[in-house]
Image 1 (cartoon, rainbow, N blue to C red):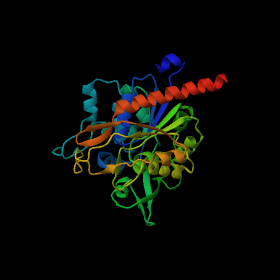
Image 2: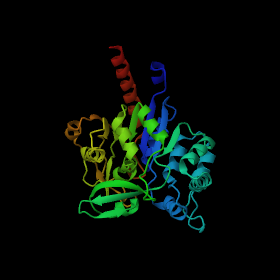
Image 3: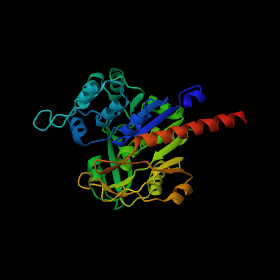
Image 4: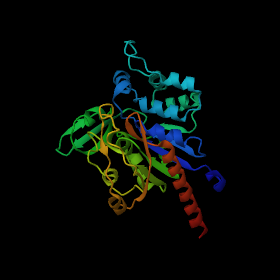
Length: 339
C-alpha cells in the first residue's frame, strides 16, 4: 500500500470534464490518495446551458457529476441529487435537482467556487472539487479554414477541423483566471491526470486559463494523459494517440505530457451503437513511436469496458495503473534524495 511506504497521502489532481472524469474519480476514491478535481466551466449544453443562459451561472452539470462520484452520502440522497425532471414537468423539464441546487448556492454566495466548497461539505465529499474558474467562460475555436466560432456545442457541431481553442470571460475587461487554490493544488501535486474526455471541449478549456497553463508548465508532478478510446466527431476524427498529445503540447507551447495511458484492447465494431453514441467515430489509432518522439512514457494495456453498446474506460483498471505510477514516481523521488 502506498501509505505504508510514504508518510503522506499522495496528491492527485484530475483535470477535465464530461462523463469520463467522474468514472476515474469514483475509482480513485478510497485509494489512500488526496484527490482534487479541477472541473471545466465552459459547458453550454443541456440543463447546464439553459441555467447558464437564464442566470449567468457557471454550468453545473460536470460539477454535479463529480460531486456524486466523490460523495460519501447514501444512494438515496445521491439519486435525489441526480434526479432529472422528465419532459411532462414543463417548468422543470430536463433539469437535474443538483444543477438547481448548485445554481441557487452560486447566486446566494455570488460565485461558484465558495458555493462548491459549501456543498462539498453538505454532500460529504471525500476530496476537493475546484471549478477551473470562479465565473462562466466561453469556449472559442479557430478552424483550419480560418473561420471562428464561440460556444462548445456550436464548435462540435460545425463539422470542421479545429486548429486551436481558447476561453474568454463574459466580461471583456479581464482575462480568465483560476483561483489560487487551483494553482496551489497543481504545484503541490504528485500526479496530474488529464482526461479521459473530449480533447477540445472538456480538457483544453481548463488548460487555456492562463495561470493554469503556466502552472502545468512549471509543476514537477508527473502529468498523465488518459487518451480517449474512440475518436470524436467534430473534434478528433482520424486522430492517433500522438495527434491528441501534439494538440495538447501545441496549445501550451511545450512538451508537458510525461505519461500516456493507451488502450490496446480491440473494440469490436459490430458492438458499437453509432446511433446511440453518435458523437463517436472509430477507435483511436496507435502511434507509439510518435508518442515517444515527444518524450512520453507509454503505458499500453487493456483499459476497455464495453457497456450499453459503447466503448468506455474501465475505471478500476485505469485507477490501478495511476496508483502504480504514483507509487513508482514517489519511490524514484525517494531514491534520488538518498543519492
